[in-house]
Length: 310
Ligand code: GUN
Image 1 (cartoon, helix red, strand yellow):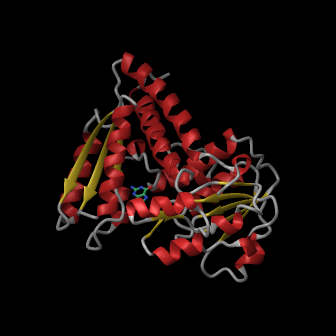
Image 2 (cartoon, rainbow, N blue to C red):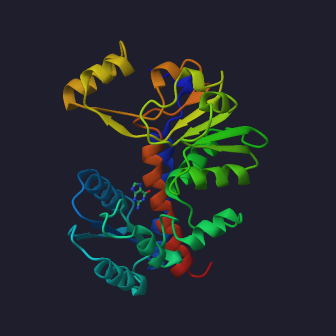
Image 3 (tube, rainbow, N blue to C red):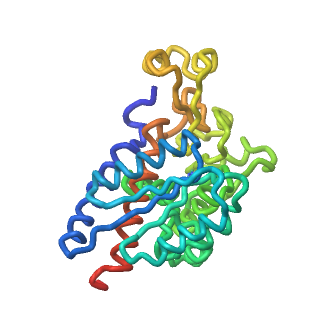
């Protein structure tokens, strides 16, 4: 269990952000502009289906419109491009999100490049990536943007401090490093080939872990008092692994008994929380922030594209 004073509560911050977005959506709608998010899902990956459903549900809760386009796994690149072109051309569509991963037969880079940058609520288009790198961000990838909001609203100072990001993905690690850099942190970006990762990550005053590897970061990776943000999300269905990860944790065991699985992150929270100054839980940390920022990006895209040019 994480002590209350150490907890970085993503669920609470995400609900603050959602409330602010709902307010903005209300104001836009009063001006006749109801933001609309279109989500494209190709194939029948169960995890992707869950994510896509929750995006549609949250859009509705905040007063936005949303459409989900479900295409069969055998969809060709040309067919998918045809849909993207149609959504790009439709003035009612403010945000376009193509759920990843796409089937292996489709080159996702070519698809993401085809989305109108003004509607690219994932922030993956090279125009948005370039603008972020130049320090004039427009639409910023949702997970790192959400982490920045969490750090800001929890008054975690970044200026001049040592930040270490573990993981160099285009979705999280790279944009995260850029955002921290622009916030004047001294940033180290680590990855699977980094030599002596524990020694490097122990330098961190702020440690962001987005490596996609369960329990990669243990006590030996973390300095006393560090702020630890865990982006990992892994479903554990093996009882002995759950017992090893959460010894004596009745809440986790009860969750396991109920659902046959628990979620855990890239950080071994049981061993790291006693050392860390602040830490995000899994679940209830970064996950809810990502979707809140997707909503914020959609409202922003609507305002910028269609707003009374204010
Ligand atoms: N799949 C996993 N994470 C993401 C994300 O942030 N955006 C999209 N489009 N797909 C994902």
